[in-house]
Image (cartoon, rainbow, N blue to C red; front, top):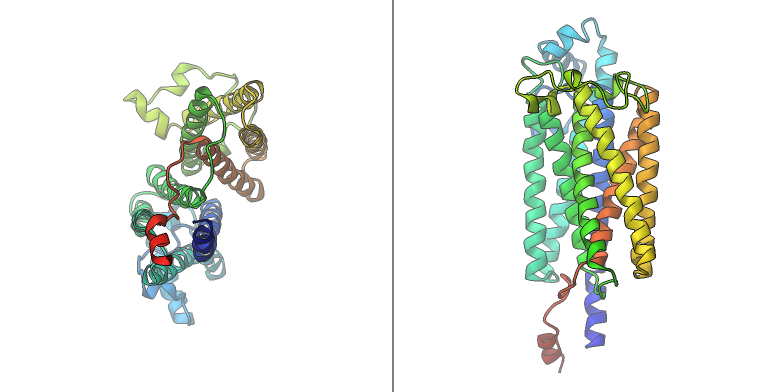
Amino acid sequence: MAAISQIRDKELRPVRVWLMVVAAMIVAMVMVGGATRLTESGLSIVEWKPVTGALPPLTDAHWHDAFEAYKKIPQYREVNRGMSLDEFKTIFWWEWSHRLLGRTIGMVFLFPFLFFLWRGVLTSELKKRLWVIFGLGGLQGFVGWWMVASGLTHRVEVSQYRLAVHLMLALIIFAAIVWVLRRMKAGATAAATGRLRVTSWVLLGLTFLQLYFGALVAGLRAGRVFNTWPDIDGAFIPAASRLFFEDPWWRNMFDNALTVQFQHRMTAYLLFALAVWHALDAILAKADRSVVNGALWLAASIAVQAMLGILTLLHQVPIDLALAHQAVAIVVLTLALLQVERMKVRDVPLASRQLDLAEGRAA
């Protein structure tokens, strides 16, 4: 059986490499998307052409047509009126690169997937999960255009609600791939208390919530206002009349720049405090070394993320700090997911076949 397992592991090595490449490309996609948002480039292409849109304008006439189409939307009229063609090309290339990378990820996922299906190296359980991931990737394309469409008629930017959905879906796809990769590896559950398992899940949930709040901050450009720390709007906790003046009250959590930034800050404090407590708990409980190390790395990454967030805020969101803040957020998500997974009760790995049948054939 050991020999069969080794053969199986060798067969699936290309599958693991393929999924790691796709995951890395999604990270690149998120970073390019962040740069597209920070440079106000996301509305420069006003049409959705999934196939023909892969080609950029190739002639002066085509560039003129693309620029004229952009001039018809509110963002040009109210924000960029008088922009030159060369300035337009700069924002166009950011958005085009973002869309091209999305198309490329789709092909890099689909064609190897079909090849592995043809070769029969994937288990039925693994195939189901990969089909779901592929479906989410297709949905992401529609969500991306749904987001862009929100800024083409009555707004000068995309809806922060749709921006948050777009980002969260990308991160869910990334997390799903990381989870599948982790589940393809056999191994015993790392020794840990039930409390550590619960707090690891809470940390993962809070991480997703914080990423969602971060997307709202980006969508509202809330990081460009109230650029002081640790106070915000003159106090550590602003006046309720400033936090909740929208009606109904819950709209403040999505539309009020002060409230959105405040809840992003408070969630960061909570996340850091819980991560430190989780790490100390793992040490005192003498949990498995991998659990302790995972908790320490998670707490350290959240600390770095918090410091980058503060610096980004104080310097009024320069693109380099903002992208670093976004990159470390993906690191935090990955570490939080791995911490949950290493303590999860394991069943048969996704990569395993029915080895008893394989043994029978081998005999």
